[in-house]
Image: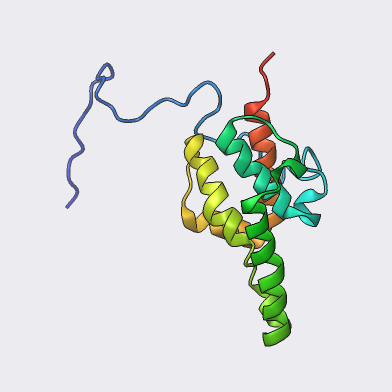
Length: 155
């Protein structure tokens, strides 16, 4: 049996659905592959820890920073998890251990959710972790480009 859906008058102001903000809040302005080879350049592939650090710094400060300005605690955490621990795992457990991207945890479980929350972009933790696991460099560059686009001075 189907329950009837109550009708709501068009002028009813009690709706909980908010219209998207004019600055594009509520949706990604840059596609997953839209940030590749742009502002972050090759750093998304060659030095993702710096881009992840820069992304978090932009989220925290609200100011555009260059990729290399992202060096700091989060950058080091990404480097240690993504490089050192993964290298030891590959050495100890064999090449298949390379399939576990420990550095992806930093971008997918910390930075991307912060970005989505700041700009009300829909998504969830599982999706964030998956996109960073399977497309880490693209996701990191997408986030960098998204932030530089949103934080750029409006002319």
